Image (cartoon, rainbow, N blue to C red):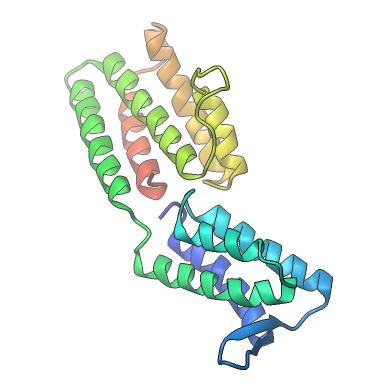
Length: 223
């Protein structure tokens, strides 16, 4: 998953446990009303839509359902009741591991292959080439993560958004925490040193650690 599964489930369970006891069953067996004040219903609606948007990729059926429900001509209390089903489905699919897509699996396979090449180069004494490859793979992974989160990876003029900017935007989008963001900054700095010929400013051990840590980062934050 894009986030740690236990953290995702905790977020969704919190919403479900707060909303579910306050839902009134409809006349045909469907939940159709959230018992709350108007501001309370709007707050719960906002939190549900935010959670679905935060935890799912752009274009997913969960986001489409959330958008369709939130745009209905109905009271917020009714929308919350309908959204509860979307949140529950999302929670169950996260728990079952169904949100790992074929695209993610293919990307992970290619990612591992290139990092394997970098590892072999580093072990053979070519630390500089290894650092450039590992850093390039990391930057591409950041772009995949940004795309998954619905973040732009190109500027209006068509030029690519810089990796450092993507890193900052991914932190804002809760793709990972501040500690991971600082680690990414350090890895990108090492890559830049290698790409600009500052070969004496890092050693083989640091490149080996870069390859290992980037692989671990991708496993925790697949795209």
